[in-house]
Length: 86
Length: 431
Image 1: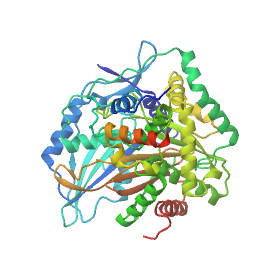
Image 2: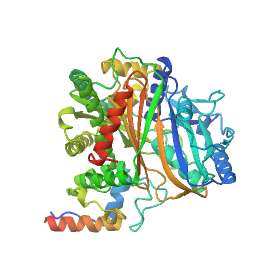
Image 3: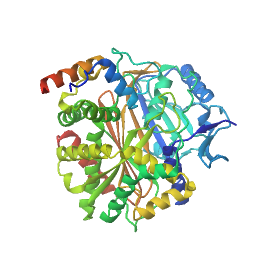
Image 4: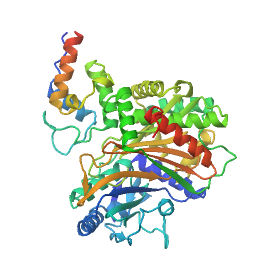
């Protein structure tokens, strides 16, 4: 069975359902995640959730500000990573 | 009188403070030093300070038991008047260690502090530099809270009403016990292993709190950031700093000829259901990690081991287990909590308090009109464990605070720890 695509919406759902971020307003695909409190602690939880939910391991060296800046950029990065893994 | 829900971390810190008082270690205070390159706007600072006091009834709150259900609540008399912002006369030098040490013990020149939060401004030097010194009771503020407070003071949105605090969900004791079991098993294993902190039974508990602040130069900070990025990537600062702290304790054990098979580290862990607008009350939970001392040979090995241990702890849902255990413990009278922990942990609480507060005032270069040069926090610690290692980061500038109790760490040992930490951060590069 094909895996569900990784979209900005699935990333946002992960961030909020796992309480990695707790914003006052809805997160949009282009919202800057760092201004919402994506710090070192939240990042460690996010990496584990990515591993569990999308079955993708992100190496620390792959974690750049551009890739993790927004739900949109993160979804693009994870989607590409999955495509390469396949 | 309004009551506000308390979290299990509030209970943990209240238990710790009760233990400190009862063992002659005073109150759990912290100090934040904000160094500015100019004069802060006095009017803006005072007005924001007063707004914060007016909108945060938590500032006058005390932990109490509710009549219904024996649960802990913050009992607040409502907003309390803001203590005046104290402006000191200009001095040639910034406030020295003796001033910080006094505040660190909850005292000012006139005796004990009567407010949980104090702000002082110290002008110094010929170039208009200033230090803003915040002294705060740890029972009301943690590393996240102090950054939120600084942000509110800096941004001027201090008048926004605090949001409703989330009431913790109530569950049957059986379910809570089941959730706590993985951690209980792990704590029993640690007890059998004989985990040591910096404190030993023949050392005093009531020694005066002491500290050392190590401000890395810009060059050293750059080296440390490069090392951090090489080992952990751009964002995993916490495991990097936690590994440095654990290795420092291991170095101390080696110097003393002690053998502790594990280092029990309390990693700050994002607490769920807390709003970033709730400045006061504790935001972070704790994730207990048990590091194999033999796996801390190099910093790279230590970080890899810590990440693997963290991953395993998260798989076992340790943050929730920790919270569940604290929920169970919160049914105890507060004063019994730490003695119970020490009894089950063979006299220890944990090996080491470690904290990484993240970047202070991210994205900000000024504070009420004055350029920010550096920020760091200095919380005091209790014995056991007798030693805490704290890292602050402002715009890439790293500051390390060693905090201990006199009689637990000698001046030579403090030197050894400082050298070890600096060498780890900068890969042994000289200043």
